[in-house]
Image 1 (tube, helix red, strand yellow):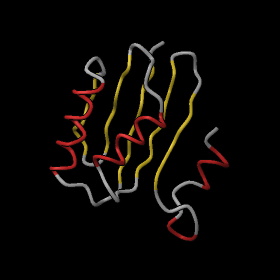
Image 2 (cartoon, rainbow, N blue to C red):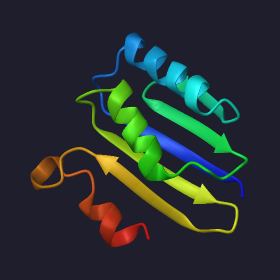
Image 3 (tube, one colour):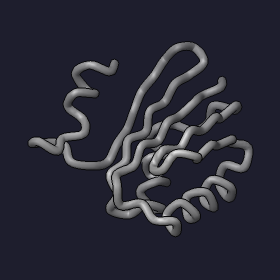
Image 4 (cartoon, one colour):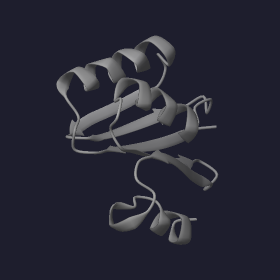
Length: 103
């Protein structure tokens, strides 16, 4: 089943991080299409449906160490989920609003 993903990253991303992530995608998921034309945003399409928000988050954490990350997953059947890494409390909290309003 086709899945689409959006990855949003924090501000600390370097060209080396992006190269590491694109190399990881090519090596581990060669049939996944991706678009990266906006800084710190990646769009991906997995026609086979094997990827998950969690597996992409884990791969992103290796390529973007210490960088906050949010992965949104959209399936062809209308289901959606998400996974992230970053601050989860206080004024910089990335996730409370999503937990309360996104699903």
